[in-house]
Image (cartoon, rainbow, N blue to C red; front, side, top):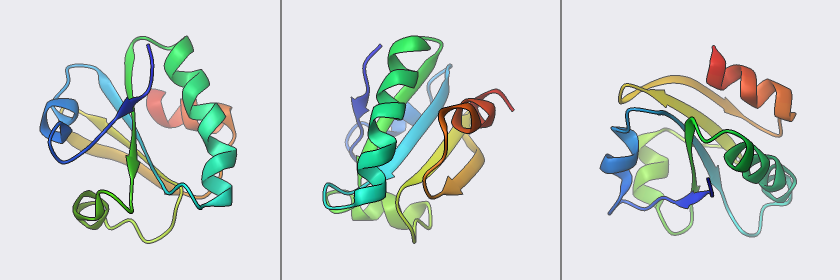
Length: 102
């Protein structure tokens, strides 16, 4: 499955998915975000049991504020419409997967 570009227009549908949701808050100009991007894409391709989305904080500032995103990249995991994990900074693939499974 590919990464979904999440906006305020499709956010509710993504958030309320029956699958666990992984959201990557990022910006195009952010170096650490570019380091995490290939990992996020790998997770999306290798794990169809998850919904994986990216939220550009410059384009979707309302969503970034709703999640209190102060640092990017920020990774958020949602299950059953509720945030169950949220971390900031570059994380290795194994750690991101453990957030999804935890």
